[in-house]
Image (cartoon, rainbow, N blue to C red; front, side, top):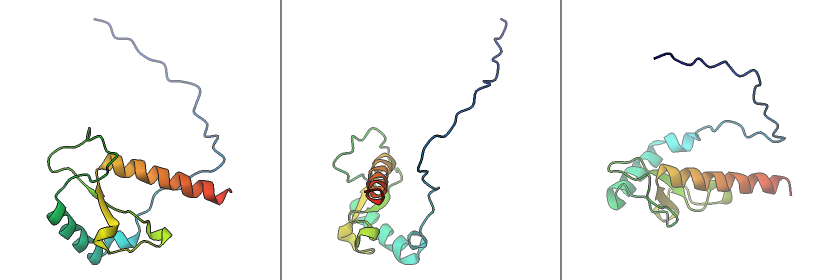
Length: 111
């Protein structure tokens, strides 16, 4: 059976955003022994489950990666190593919450 060959597109995508968000960089705090110990304790206590009440659970599976997410963000004065300020989130929930917070902060810069 003959194959169809595609022609490369000659028009490229142009980024027209006025404000460009830089690449995400990991804060050294999240690589610290104190944070890693706290996360190990929280996961041992609560299990590897997403605690986000808005999560629909479609991406969940046994042994999934969970992210420790500050309920009150560190930049908003949240306690960095307080278990009560940490919510475990699946990747989808963490990404969604991070995008919402990033958009909120970006909007505040231009108010």
